[in-house]
Length: 115
Image (tube, helix red, strand yellow):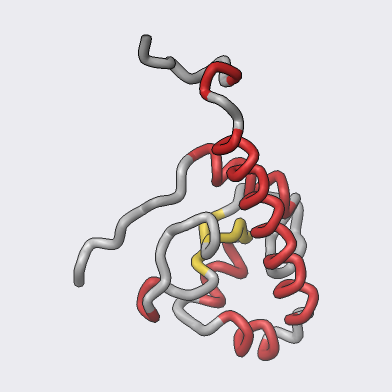
């Protein structure tokens, strides 16, 4: 099996955990959380901020490589609520990245600007 790129940074992972404030699937707030690919790696997904959500160990092991919407239905979890929230969080995180990208480099305290 080919190696899959892990494009999710630690900062993005922390932002995802803060945005979801619990398991993305069942809402459990007892952590620790695991990274789950909404579109599984085996189905072409990647470890990216757009495809990873924080989940409890129980949901992660239950979902495994299953397609997320069919798994949510089978578990009688709120598919619509998950998908809506997933889209909202992705939009917020994308806007934050755009804001950072549009800020002049000199305004970033944590970035070394070549002189």
